Image (cartoon, rainbow, N blue to C red; front, side, top):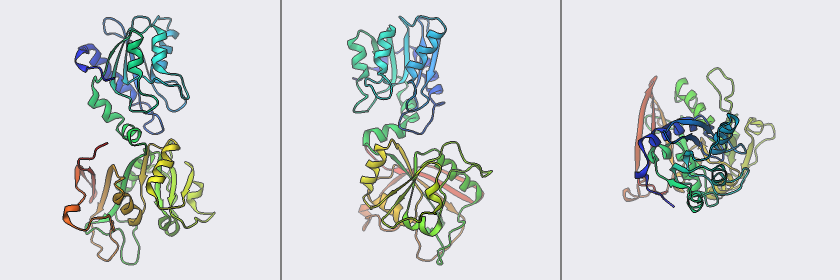
Length: 349
């Protein structure tokens, strides 16, 4: 059900902006999206608010209702302004649409429709219960906030960010195989921040065996970020029992095989909604060839290396007509390095 956004009042739009603001305070990683909810009275005044703190915790609507009741205020007749269509199923918590109905909420204004095969349909349930429902309010901002979760839910696989470092002539290593460091400290610090902002990080077996990386997400002072991604190794060769990656604080998983779609499905089933690819040219090229990359993070150091070690290998392009076209979203410069963010052009999700 997709109620029209045109009937939302100016005060409801303002309340939605507040809901989006508090939603961003929730965790950006994990199986659940960032969601915010504010409850307003007939004058458009916010009387309570809440946001989701992650999987297994009360949803934003329930948090807002709980705060209201703790303050001794009756929610009956109020309007709930929520960034995501209230869910209609019982998972680790109960259905939010039912909680709103039982509380006597008179009107629900939401931002983004829930694409989940199990959780969608809350708007219909609310309407059938006599609750006035309006959807699509500040939708563009709402979709931007939880874009990775939305894409992941629609495709039933993690959002994939692919990062590689290369010289200006496209090499990922010198002829002798050395690659430390193509980019500078600031760029590498940003990569660690990116790691912490994803549910999982993946490399191929060659990277794991040759470099013995820890793959932890570290702050510039060397301490670990609070959130650590699941470390994933892709490939058949066994990883040594004392390899650093096996003691990763976010957990370790080896996918014994080369079927990347199978891997993506397995990770989604584990609650992984975002995956950061940081392997070498073989793994990077395989993800590109399988059309599994949602965003490219290409870092370039201001040097020339020459030699045969290209940042990408065979990606299934043999002629210009088969070129994979990208839309460049940003180009940033930092201490001689260049960071390009791009996305596949005309990708349908």
